[in-house]
Structures are given as C-alpha cells and as structure tokens.
Amino acid sequence: MCGIIGYTGKLEAQNVLIDGLSRLEYRGYDSAGIAYFRENIAHISIRKTAGKVKDLRSVCDKVNPSTCGIGHTRWATHGGVSTTNAHPHRVGQVALIHNGIIENYAAITEKFNLGDELQSETDTEVGAALLNHFYSQDHDPKSAIRKAVAEIKGSFAFGILFEDRPGEIYAVRNVSPMVAAYDPEIGAFIASDVTAFIEHTNRYFVVPEYAVVALSPNGIEVEDLKGQKLTPEFMTVDWDLTAAEKDGYPHFMLKEIHEQPAAITQTITPRIADGLPDFSQDGVSDAFFEGVRDVTIIACGTAMYAGMVGAEFIQNHLGLPVTVSIASEFRYARPVIDKDSMVIVVSQSGETIDTLEALRLAKKYTDRTLSIVNVKASSIARESHYVVYTHAGPEIAVASTKAYTVQVATMFLLGFKLGLASGRLTEDEARDRVAALKAMPAHMEEVLAYENQVKELTSRMINAHDAFYIGRGLDYRVAMEGALKLKEISYIHAEAYAAGELKHGTISLIEKGVPVIAIANQQPVYEKMISNIREVKARDAFVILISKDKAVHDPSICNVHLSIPDVPDDFTVFETAVLCQLIGYYTSVGKGLDPDQPRNLAKSVTVE
Ligand code: AGP
Image (cartoon, rainbow, N blue to C red; front, side, top):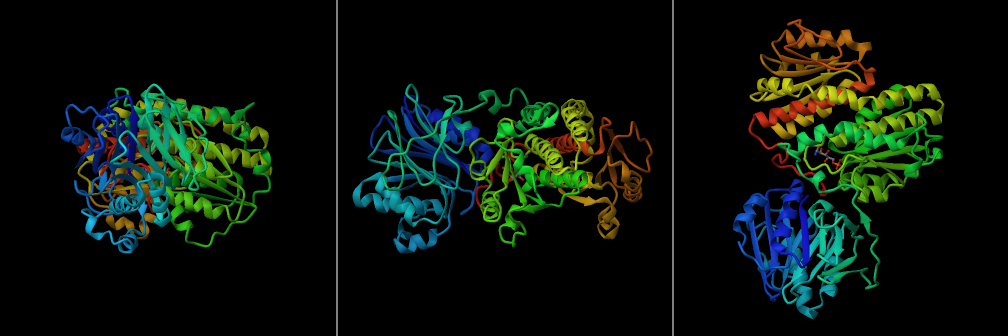
C-alpha cells in the first residue's frame, strides 16, 4: 500500500508533491521520491531515498522551478527498502510511480526482453520498462498505456511522466485507489486519496478503473481504453484540512481516540428517526432487513474485530445466526450463504483488497450486501449493493481507533433494525437500546478522562514481551481488538483469550509481571470472570482490571482497577475500547515508538 500523488499547474510542484506525500505517509513510509520537470524543459529530474518523506525533503533541490511532477511514498512489496527500489522508477523516456502489484512482472520481463533495462528488484520498474517499450514505438502516451495495461495482470494506480512531454501527467488504475482533481486557478492533481491535495481543492472525482487520464495545467481528460471520452463525476469532500492534521495532539492516533464521541454521534444521528433505527437516508429500505435468515460479516484486522463485536451483539439480542469471516479466508472457502443471507462488509478505507474481493464473491450468492465504510466513494462502497458510511472523518493513524467504534455503533443500529424487522425486538425494546447507544459518547468522554491513569500504568508494560487480554462473551471480542492495538504499535506480543479457556493450556505462559488486561463487564459471567482473574493473579501476573465496579482494591484480583461508568453490559464495549486504545498508545509512546507509523504496516492494505 503506497501513496501516490501527481500535480501539474501553477504552483511550485516540489512543495505540492512533498507536502502531499507527508499526508499520504500513513499509506506507507519506508522510502519516498519525486520525479519532475524543471521549467517545462523536456528533462525528468528524480530525487528519491530510503526513509521517510522528511528524508526526501533533505535530498531535494532547495530551489526548484518546477510546476509538474509525480511523487510516491512506499510500503515495500517486491524488493527491499532501498533508494534503488524507491519510486519513481525511470526507464528510457518514462518515469513511473505505482501503488499495487504487477503479478506477472516476471513473464512481462521475459516476453519483452526487458531484463537489461532493470536496476531494481521491483515489479514497478518492469511497468516503467513496458511503458517505455511501447512509447518508443509510436510516442503516443495513451496508446502506450493501453498496450501496457493489456499486458499487465494485477492491481495498479500508475502516475506516469513521458520525458518529451513536459507539463503533462498520465494516469491509469485497476483496483488500487486513485482520485483526481482540477482547479483552473491551481492545476490538476491525481492522488491515492484526497488528503494529498485537500489544502488546494476539495472537489475531486474517483478515477474509473482502466480509464486513461491525461493531466495538464489546462485541464484533465478522461477516456476509456477505446478512446471514448468519459465525463468525471465530481464530488466535494465533507471535511477540511484540519481533519487531516494533528490539531495540537502529539500523534494522529491520540487525536482520533479523542474524536470518537463526536464520530459516533455524527455517525448514528442520521440513522435514528423518532428514537428508532432508520437507514432510509442511506437508501436502505426496510425490505432489506426482512426475511433475513442469517448474517455474515466480512472484514480484516480491526474491522473484523468490530465485526466480532457486532456478531456477538446481534446474536445475543436477536438469536439470529451471525458468522464473522476473515476476508482473506472467506475468499477461498465455500461460502455458506444464499439469497436470504445478509452480508455486511466492514472497511474503514473501503479499499482493502481482500475485503473487496470477498465482497465480489459474496455478491454471486446474495444481493443483500451492505458495506460499512468510512471513505466516501471507495471501491467497497461503490461495489456493495448498499453502503452505510461512517462519519468519523479521515482516519490517518495506521492503528484504527475511531473507525472501530463507529463501525461497532453502526452494527448495533443495524442489529436493532434487524430485530424490529424480524419481530425479535419490540419498538419499546429498540427505543431503549437506541437511547443507550446515544448515551455512549458522553460515557466515552468520562473514560477519556482516565488518560493520565492509563499513561501511568503502561509504565509497567513497556518492558513486557507478552501480554494477554482476557474476557468472556462480548468482553472477549473486545479483547481481540485490544490485543491488536497493543501489538501493532508497541511490538509486544499480545493475545486475546477467552478467560474460561486459559486454564486449558495457555495459563502456562503466565509468570511474574506478565501484563493481563482483564475485562469483566458482562454481569452474567462476572463471578466466573473474577475466578479466572484470580487464577492468573495467583501466578503473579500484573493484572489491569476493567469493570463497572466502583473500586476493586483486592490484591488477589488486580494491581490496577479501571472503573468504567455503569451502562448496560453490551454497551461497555465502547468504554473498554477507549481504554484498550489508550493502553496501546501510551505503551508505544512509552517505548519511544511512533504509534502513527508502526514498522512494517500501512494504513490501507491494497495488496493481497
Ligand atoms: C488496524 O489498526 C489496522 N490498521 C488494520 O488491521 C486494519 O484495520 C485492516 O487492515 C482493515 O483495514 P480497512 O478497515 O481499511 O479495511
């Protein structure tokens, strides 16, 4: 998953490109580079380096009279992290940036005998060589692009410069995301997402797959592979630049943790009418919820853990069978769904390739696919039969936080609606639950006030090698996300475990000082949970207890007690999530790490 940007127009391109790349770094940050024309001379300059965008700035020209160029920040797929493997890649007349994977790069290399032209280990350089091969035949950029994409198998978002065409940028995509924008006063842009150019314009369009885009300071032309002109469908971004900046927080992740109460309110309010769940504004009719025999929730990572909570909640409240499928597994198993199945696809970015392909498979079995997506007009949003957008604003930190809780809140509302449609919930019961949900943002604010207490306790975690998150029922599902939050940004191995299962083997790993985050909010199993906690405490674990109790000072139960506001059991997931996010965040910061850009990760996984 990489970040790409292209700009041609009246502004100084180097600044536009590098500022844009810094906003795209959450998509990948192991190397970065730009290619640009100086003063509209037919010569491409390239500056690139292993490292982050700030390192790229240091190798760029201090003064650079350029008004056209392309830029890239990389998450390595083919070839290690090095300056040679950094994009842009130049072969002959062509400079290329790429987000995606050219799956048949080896076959292309052999078929067109490109080997001698390659310096790097990347698939992208093969793409540049292929484009150059065709361009050298007829010096027609669009013809070269059409011929090249006809040969390529895989996902791509290409930004292309042709050396004898200063001021012009060409682009084409398949699966990998790309948006474009044009403002007569500024110029034309392409990018992986709008955060790259939001400070210049908020009107953009999603580049259609396999459309050939030609950008110049005078405008943007879009045509299909047959050369037919296409009219872009412009949209307007519904948030501003500050949403894509830290606003005084040390990290995007902490900012986004604090944005959750507002994000939930913004997401659920348009879906509540007269105290009841209502998705009519999303174009989802009541009929969509009728006659549903079973539900399958499909996602990856944090979105999948949100699905786990949604599934447990819907099953608890409705007695409706709900299955959660890891998207990369769903794709290769035999789906057990049909026309009476509802499929809910969850994705913050709306571009996760495994989830997108799983959606495409599910659509072969049912026309009841509904996606819960945070990025407007993203691929998953556009390809699902219905989409319910979460209104969390851009989530920049790689570690998902506000997207998780708005996804859970949306699934709760969908569950209420399903309950009403199936007669499993009365209107009064639905109203009560909707009211409880509407009250959660305020309770989350109360929990955010524990920030300093959490920061203090994480000092006992920073030297841990392993940590365990244990719970029962919904608490066990939330524990899954808690464990992911810790490990992906602090690099401590963390595991979620059903508390009743620990004694069947894993408890052998509990020894003095091992952090155990014990979540005990489900009252029907509270006593059992306390017994399980005593079992680990008896083996000297460092236990952090999260529960609705006012205060627990019993040293045989916990070292630290985080008491959360008393809300119905199922709704405690929102409070617990905030605490788990803060635990992960402050452990990462306490270890001197950058929680916004954890090693090896990228925000949107658009490669398989
Ligand atoms: C979560 O913190 C990770 N960034 C990752 O697991 C993420 O949730 C997953 O890749 C799914 O992304 P999506 O929601 O954009 O599809």
